[in-house]
Amino acid sequence: MISEYARPLLLTGIKTKRWKKKTDFYSLFLYLASHKNFLPLNYDMRSKIRLALDEFETTINRYLSSDSEDTFGEDSTNYGKSVIASSDLGNRKRRHISLSNLLDPIFGVGINGHGKTEVTPLQEGLFDITDSEDEA
Image 1 (spheres, one colour):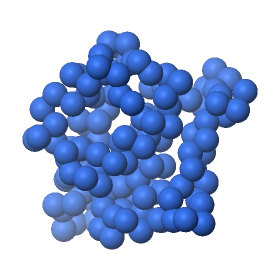
Image 2 (cartoon, rainbow, N blue to C red):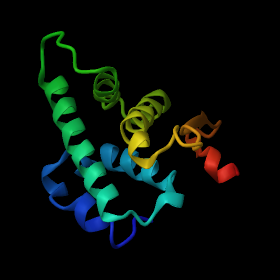
Image 3 (cartoon, one colour):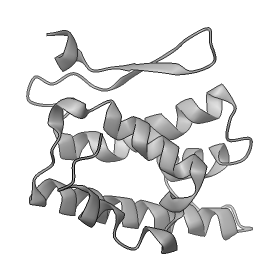
């Protein structure tokens, strides 16, 4: 799914990143799969996504290791909370929404006539992701 051109920059050093964890990798993979019409990613997009993910990871890790009520931002807080009981449908959905809020602006989703990423729960316990652009 992820093109051979996107893999090196997005996955370089993944063994030291939170995205190596099954839950986080799965969340990122589903987000990217829901935007398959943007693949393969050019170098500029890969760089922006990697930078955003690295910064997001830092904030999530600070949130998870903090005992204080510091403000970490809604998306970092929601993602961090949803790592616990990670297979719960609501938590999977929250992680996806947090990644959408982080990465949609890089993909241009929600601007320039592209619809915002939508997440719709299914009975089977998974969720279906629809892009307005896919429907066009």
